Image (cartoon, rainbow, N blue to C red; front, side, top):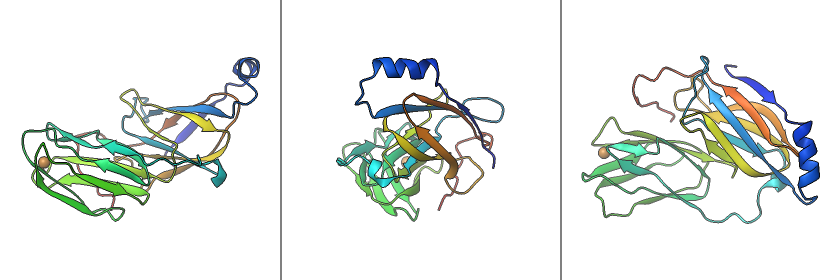
Length: 219
Ligand SMILES: [Cu+2]
């Protein structure tokens, strides 16, 4: 296992504050993690997903959601997008040139042939898994969509920070994924428990060095 988890529990003073200031009906709390490489540098574009151990923890009203995977300066933007299964993703083209977006990934195979700025293209991602995006015209374009089997996920920012708020209390399996990690699947990390205090942790992930935005085939 190439990941080391260091948990920092904030019981004690924080728990005391929670007891004093939170209403008795508060049934959720927050999770945050800092993702680092083995040298302690922040890792951007890592997906952290929390899968509830009890299915009843899922929010009852799952609204249809939409998300955007843009194309800007011949790059997919964001580089990594995370969505819940059942989400429709829009693929606008913000460049003044045409793109030809495709995926050969088993999770969702599709193709939007050459299209320009004013055309609207969408895809429904109904199965969980990892989708690799490419452009037939521009080989250097590569993007990823992580389709999560949970509404509880976050993608790390440039400082390696992830945050998930309004988490129902309970036990979760923590998964982490990054396009340049060595393992070929989302890594199950272990269990965490969300109780009556913010849960904070650091995740150390061994990834390949970033020479360029090379294509990594996940299908
Ligand atoms: Cu293109």
